[in-house]
Image 1 (tube, one colour):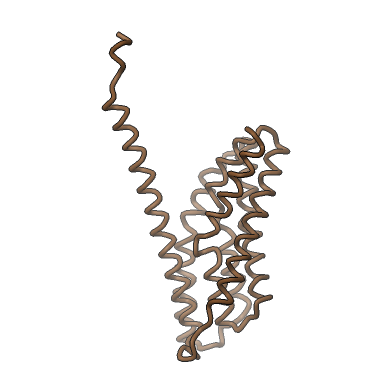
Image 2 (image 1 turned 90 degrees about the horizontal axis):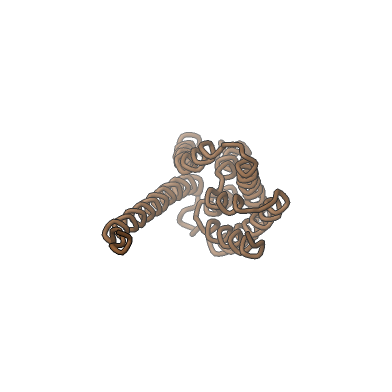
Length: 219
């Protein structure tokens, strides 16, 4: 396929996919709860984003090479919102039972893994249309770069705009856990809506083809 068209497709998917709230909101609320600055927040965002695009590119290239990891990729994407919900609930509960004593690097690492180990499935069909291995690698680099730029930009803007009000002082960890859980729920709803739209369109196309019937001139 034309490399320019592949590039446009990769950038478009990178931008639209990165708009999903789970790509930046969990990191922002957790960094705010831990009183992290903008540098630390962007570092977290970069690490999670790098793991995310690295995994997506690896799975895409593996499938392009003929290694069937589609089931694994799909499972990782489906389970990611549930892991986000569990993490948020656990973090909120710990904020109540242990106060601020749980604010260690362990929660950061866990969140980075939850966010990073969630591949971008829509990118895989794009990389599969590459004609050569070198072209597939170039498309993976384009997708990764565009995704990281989008995620870091959204993280920076959202961090500047999201400032906890004074009345939540002392409840930052609890609110962070709840917001992360809600983010996971929102992602689940969005994914369910996308599946429903896809199913509706497929059925609608089938019905249109059935109603049209065979061309009588072929008999």
